[in-house]
Length: 150
Image (cartoon, rainbow, N blue to C red; front, side, top):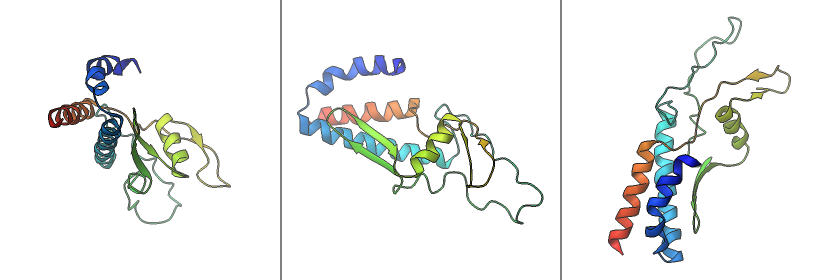
């Protein structure tokens, strides 16, 4: 969290001046915008630092014919599974339900069994959620826009 320390210090005074209801509203707005930017970044198959995700492993020759018709994490990035919420002092973007486990495996690069009777597969690390410099600019813009309204 040390990367957020200068950002937090710079804006702590501005946020402290808001009423609790104003903070909740601002946090919800920030969370929605962050979810939108995370969805776009996942759609582009890029990590928060801008590097592309590691490609899928090639399927064995004896597997079903055809190609993989969907990009990675296509359903995962929908609003049904990726929730945004704003509370008094926090803006949260998270995966919910059963997909949270799948997202965590890819986020951290863990081992998992794709199906009940298969071997464990070691998944490469693919950062799904994270804060980029563009996200920090979005947050800053929303904060200043909110401050000028009040």
